[in-house]
Amino acid sequence: MIFELMIALTVGAVMFGTGLYGALSQTNLVMIIMGVELILAAALVNLVAFWRYLHPGEPAAQMFVLVVMAVMAVEMAVGFGIAIARFRSRGSVEMEEASELKG
Amino acid sequence: MTILIVLLSLAVGAYLIAVLESWAVHGRLQPARPAISALALLGRESLLARTPDRLLFETGPVLLLVAGLLAVAVIPLAPGLIITDMATGALFLNAALAYVLVALIMAGWGPNGAYGMIGGWRFLGQFVAYAMLIVMPITAVVLRAESLSTVDIVTSQSSLWNIAYQPLGFALFVAAAMGLCWLPPLDLPTAPGDLAGGVEAEYTGVRFAVLRLARMVIILALAGATVTFYLGGWLGPWLPDWAWSGIKILIVAGLMVSAGRLVPRVRETRYLELSWKLGIPLALGNIFLVGVIVLVVPI
Amino acid sequence: MTSQMIFLVFFGGAAVWFGVTVFRTHSMVRSALALLFSQTAVGLMFLVMQAEFLGVLQIMMMATEMSVMAIFMVMFMMDPGGMGAMDMTHQKRLSLWAGGVGLGAAMAVIWLADWGPPGGNLPETAEQTAELGRELLGRSMFIFQSVGLTILTAMVSATMVAIAPAKEQPK
Image (cartoon, rainbow over all chains, first blue to last red; front, side, top):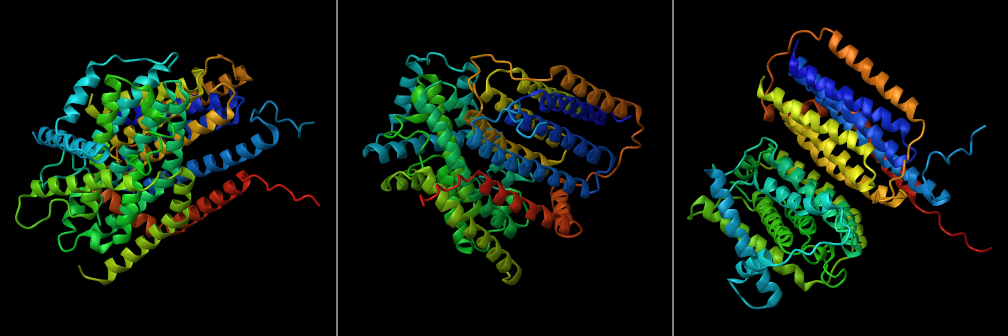
């Protein structure tokens, strides 16, 4: 029972729950992206905790963390590009009003 | 003990650079001017904006000072005279200086004033320009030293200083560094004419003194970084190590503060254009060139 | 109670508190800055766990990314200063349940699983970075190259989507 591992994993779990709540409950696209960033940060905490306490000699785990960081940056960039385009065509990025394809 | 010595030399250096900057701005050498104006600022009344965002208003200058001090912590003044010799020192310097942006955004948004806010957001535009441009020359320097530690970077220059080995990287690093510490001609956040003082306009009294002090610390940190990465740190013939570092840092900081005033202010669109269309391809070419030279030439 | 445990609790608590502040505050700029400091706390946790390169990288990248997010919030949100105190949420019960179920499932797995013995021989920081470099350019070269290509594609596509279409010439 490695206590440091438990603490880090618990922090990751709580951040994941918060991020999931935020991503599902917010109406604005930018806030949804912020929720997703929290979820990815929780995943990073878990990865580093597993690397440090279970397999410290394995550099591939750090490689995985770099890939997740790159994915965070890429997803944010593309998300904001879409937000700009939508704002330009509709005037707002509220998800409640994005129901053109519904029904 | 080393922490005290480094902080003391930082204070002395900041005072000397303030004297140099007042000489460049006002045209007369007044050695007592920074002390007098610091005392005057501490005594003046602190005017508050009408509906500021109190938390961000107070935290802005303090975060700026903390970022500057953290950046100074990894600069070596002599082989043992460094606050913390982190194994990833060069990257830590960059990480600490990234909080200059956060602090200026807070300081711009906090006072709830138009000019300050515009100054803060314009600095973000400047930041997008210099952020990549400051990391790539550092990568080329680290490539030669084969280590991220600042002490190793200095000792790797014992045969030939990096300014002769990678002059292109030096030019790009200085151009990006002047954008980071918002020295003229890249002083958009606190433009005296354009934005009536910009971010500094809403701060008075003690907070303004902290803001100016933080700016001096950042200028010294960047001069120290230039000396460590490109001018050989403490390496030199007759004088002791710390004397060489001090002289080099003061010369570089003095040049940074005074040389830019001869050129008109650069708008962030122009800086962005130059940096991304010209600067980053040159920086990538620099990395490639340095890599080839490191593998081929045995110095 | 080792010092590592104390620091992990402190920085972990800071990360969680800032993360919760993101969705509780009314001011949009404060929300973005709270996310920034939450990510910084995560980076500091990495430093405590002796992954120095990753910690410094996280701190540096997140400062810049979240500042960019702050300006996008000011551009797109209706009430960036938060003085209006609007409630901008929908399907609150569903999302609370989803968050709670996610948290509960994760906690169940964490506390009921047997994670095995602690791994040994943590390498020195400089050696960690060197090993990571060799791994990146050696065994994981393919992953590295495809990530680089993905980033380039994302940059080009985001720029193309965001550029305003040129005004059509009157025929």
